Length: 93
Image (cartoon, rainbow, N blue to C red):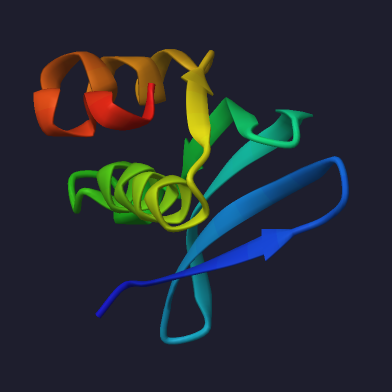
């Protein structure tokens, strides 16, 4: 089962997907200000492609944004495509 963990630092952070201690993917972000993050890159390990790893990381970012009451700017083309296809995520844009 794929697990998503968040690593947040003062100005940057990332969501890391793992399965059995193997990194499946990583999605990085930067803090634009105290209430907005910019998703700038999403990468999935080739052996995990086709398993919705990227979608799971975007979902984790949306949950984080909702919990913290912040907004997301999806600069990463993959993340932007997920937001474009998922109207229920638009509340965090």
